[in-house]
Length: 257
Image 1 (cartoon, rainbow, N blue to C red):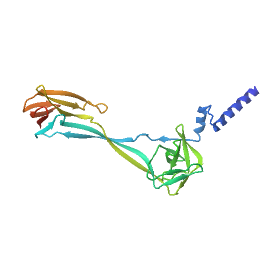
Image 2 (cartoon, helix red, strand yellow):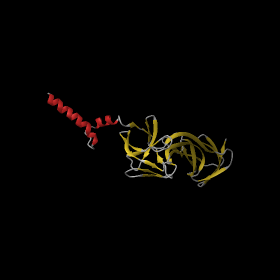
Image 3 (cartoon, rainbow, N blue to C red):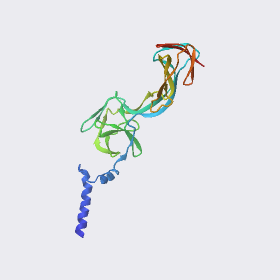
Image 4 (cartoon, one colour):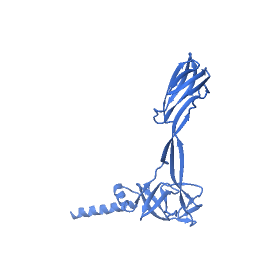
């Protein structure tokens, strides 16, 4: 019985030393051991973050004024767009520099931006992380912009700080946050648009694009027609229009209020 217990003890101790090699026969145990020497990473979004949205009304309706458009053009419209504003967190160096090490030095350029992939808190200090020359490793930036003299490696969503020393050169090298933003206008999400389709078979034809039923920035359309007649008053999408004249190529009209 004692021999069996001794064999089991040796087996367990052997398992604890396997992590020193690349052999990984007990990944759950390795992750549990690493949790004591690594730090959880708060990852930032990979894509620019949406910070605000607003709606813009684009109306092209002139009341009680004679107007004219040609075949295929817009007679009148009232479209609503959504304006999305996005923001992305980046870092920029105050000057060109090098992170010197005993292995391969990594250059940092002042005319480039570096994406912050996440943050980590160590001993109450929050560090921003951005990739090194290899995506497997990250540089660590202190709150004042100074680069930490060691690099990290992200494993299973946690940061392991490595022993390799990196010396920022010059010593005035700093990384400062840059918040970039961009604005994107969507397709119409509400409203309508009326286009002139000419005269066919004695009728005036129009295409009505209805964005009030929009789904995924789409909409619906329908073709409507009215008997061709000068000074006719027609109603399209709730708008009263007086047709002064119309032919195959052009329509003259007035939107009544």
